[in-house]
Image (cartoon, one colour):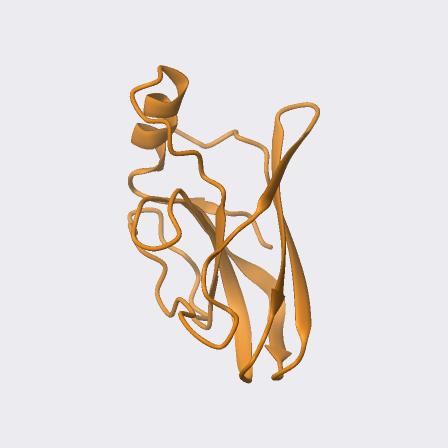
Length: 127
């Protein structure tokens, strides 16, 4: 993924996680067919895939020092689609978007294909 762009609500919800106001961690990966560069003011990811095995899914979350959050999930597709972007969210649908970013190139997948996504964030947004 290219450098991720934080969603408009990301800083608010990260702060709420830090002090316990929110207990909904960002642990869901969404996929998108949208090839446009993400914009920092977005609260949704355009072109999000919602069917065919590419719908938002709970990731396995992990941590790499120093300060890198990691999300991993393998999607199994039942329809053909071209994935261009991924996003990290705090809910299986709706919710709040932490960040989104373009893949280095569009990844076409066919029905029956598995695609493993490993997303990393250094937690160093520009404020």
